[in-house]
Length: 399
Image (cartoon, rainbow, N blue to C red; front, side, top):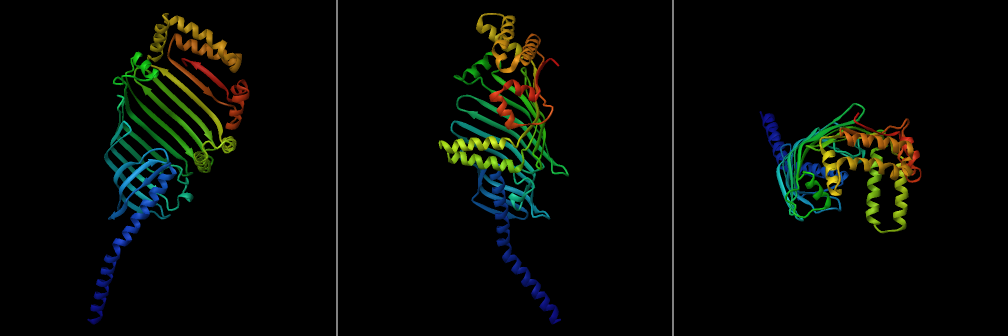
């Protein structure tokens, strides 16, 4: 009987000690989560700070959190940021099931920024960011969403984006696939009383309000830096769709870190003369690590071209046909010395075909063999015609 009483007393004592020590353990855990979050944000060129960290069950709240681009802007006050259901995985990584911010508004410098419905799921906080799979070069999460983002400026410009999303998946060979987009965007220029020439021209063309959507898919393989943009499209209603595809390699985590270090040195040595020259040479050396595989730019017209031609004709007091004829005459005279006769003829024919019957215009570069970026830059400065042949540059219309 006495033995049972001793066991009971020991159990009660252990429970009391655990209860007394629990707050300190939770505080330490919460602080570690916060520090990992700060380190990860720093890798994204974001400076994060907070006044305190507390833990409630498996949730960690960073009190009085702020966020700012490093050395570029004032900090945005986020307030209390709760990381929901933080768990530790076998390799020591913290996984955050969900981060949510219902609404946010901040005003500074004549602008008001606000958003609603931000969520991020599956965020990973590595134990050692330098030895993490991607060295912290990209955020690893499952999905992020933003219901609406609004920007209002005192000069009258307003803009909004709705249903912004991005989803990340990682394959067995650590390749990162990204799929994201903006369901709808809108920019209202009508209230701008005195804008730039570009704003005034847009209004003349009938684009006082610009509406559209965006979509992007791509992949990145950290081992060799192979980066592929398989789809990047921006559609503007009653204007057209701009599409981009790209393929290059060498954009490794080490390259990203080196570029970041160079950026910091450049900021420290601003106006440094010889230092800036040395950094420029170092930049050229780094570009040698990137290799170009191909790229396409494509525009699909939805009345923008006709409106632009009519506007140019009105400004000159002529007709649309006259503007097209001028373009076909000017291109050979202006570009033959730089592009060579073959590509200039190709460009003139494609532009003429497109302007006469606006449908699609595509510029593509598909070299037979991958070309180092440094070679591209050197050829662009010294022998543009040679560069064109190296990358297989072509312009096509209505295909």
